[in-house]
Structure formats: C-alpha cells, structure tokens
Length: 130
Image (tube, rainbow, N blue to C red; front, side, top):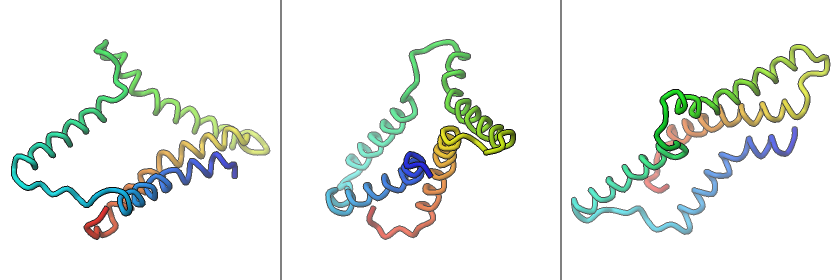
C-alpha cells in the first residue's frame, strides 16, 4: 500500500488523537456558565460558528445554477475517480494503475472512514471529559 494511502486512512484518527491530547493536557476544564447571560452568549457564539462553517467556501451571490455546480464539484470528482478505478479494475488485465487505485482509496477513506469514526465517537459512552 502506498504511504499516501496510509496517511489518508489514518488522517481522521490522528486528528482525533490530537484533539484528545489537547483536551487532556492543554485545554482548561469545560466552561460552565455562571448565569443565563453567559449561557446565552455561549449559545450565540456556537450559532455564529455553525453559520460560518455552513457558509465557508460559498461564493458571492450568483445565479442558482452556478451555486449548484460549485456544490456538486466534490461529488462529481469523487464519482469520476471511483468510476475510473472500477473501469480499470474490470478492463485492464493487471488491475487498476497504482495512481488511480491510491486516489480511489483516499476518496473511499474520506467518504466512509470519516463517517465511521464519527459514528464510533457518538457510540462511545461519555466520561464527562472531552
């Protein structure tokens, strides 16, 4: 297996390990609001964070079909890469070329590995610390 493919596979796990180490040794304890005003400000900042994450990468207001094309680029590239890999696996006697196989593996790990890690994190019992 190519080292780039291994890095793509282990990337989400390394990120979670880093988050865990930072939360354990560097970050302060969980913030606990003292009054309703602090709690409300905390929720507003969470909402602002989610809005910023949702709007990240979106361009200036444009035609709806342009926005649709921009949003469909990632799934289209992933589909082309996976179809190319499948086509090479079916038609070439030696199987897919290493470059195409590694690119398809990275996409597969991105699509399914990250979601699997997310669901595993949700299924683990919380100890009160993050």
